Length: 164
Image (tube, rainbow, N blue to C red; front, side, top):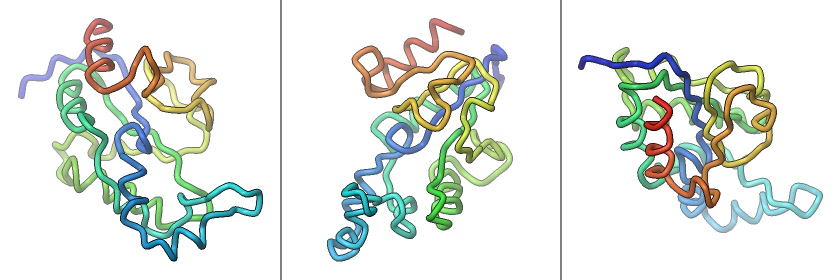
């Protein structure tokens, strides 16, 4: 493939951006969900369920969007993994390899960054559904997935093509 990269770097979050978290939760037995229903403050901590990240489906249009953007942008996955769920770290890598391949010519070969401080990464765009973990302090442009301005992948792809 003859790539026409513009030199702009795009970071993409995983949970509820590339990956449908609810699809994984739907595959967890009810008894296990009950164990993680309260983190001591009354909130669920489902992201601590071992191997939940290996059960998730891609968000609608996410895989196609990455393939569409790859020739034009330097793409990286920039995700946070729960500190108390060590399997999440390896599950995220396995998910990327399952959906994008393991070979050195795959889109995200050695382009997965796990960080609780997304603002430490330098780039032009960060696509994330939340402003947590440094996303709101990111020095480039935060494209907030799932908002009225960017409700889905087609809207984001259209916007980024205008920036190319």
